[in-house]
Amino acid sequence: MLCPLCEHTGILPFWQDKTRNYYRCDRCRLIFVDPAQRLNADAEKAIYDTHQNDPGDPGYRRFLARLAEPLAARLAAGSRGLDFGCGPGPALALMMEEAGFATRTYDPYYAPYPEHLAQSYDFVTCTEAIEHFYHPGREWRRLLGLLRPGAWLGIMTKLALDRSAFANWHYKQDPTHVSFFSRETFHWLAERDGLNIVIIGADVILLQKPESV
Image (cartoon, rainbow, N blue to C red; front, side):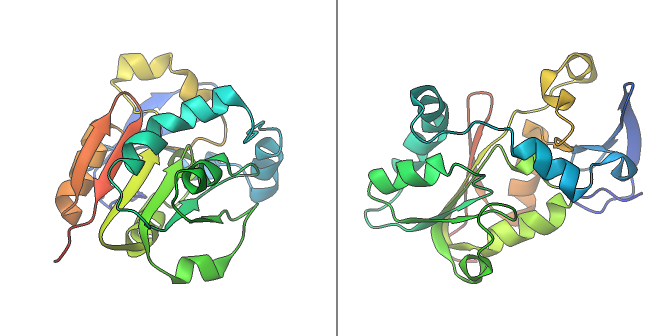
């Protein structure tokens, strides 16, 4: 078994519950579900279809503002972006548009626009999506490839802690959550890929691609 993020072979059992086995990479520290225990596409989408992500819901907008506001504060006027994994209700894209930043959307189920992945952007957002990635290494490379020099990648995902916290962690109970990142994972990625990193609170990660390589 290889780590699905960094392809390292140093994989150790991390936790087991009644339905799934979890492993952790001893290099990048990603925690991931046994690939044989992931849902198929139809079962996964059926769960997504039950999500209530209403762009007009004030509570949902406050939740997303924890990423949108610090990201917007770092963007130049006229910046253009992409909301990757926008889901059925692309609230964040709407919020960034309202802040003056033209924002396109992409989602394999709800906004399957491959032409939007053939361009580069001043910012890319990925909120409550990276934990769903079956192939996080491939998707990470795709996200970085969408960034222009100096661009920002804004991620929102709950950060994994130690084994004792993981045992009672509600976040792992969602059967569509299969890749769990920690602070150590994001710092490892930032160092490997030469990114500037800012972690805000418990679940907002901002990474900036350097102006030049």
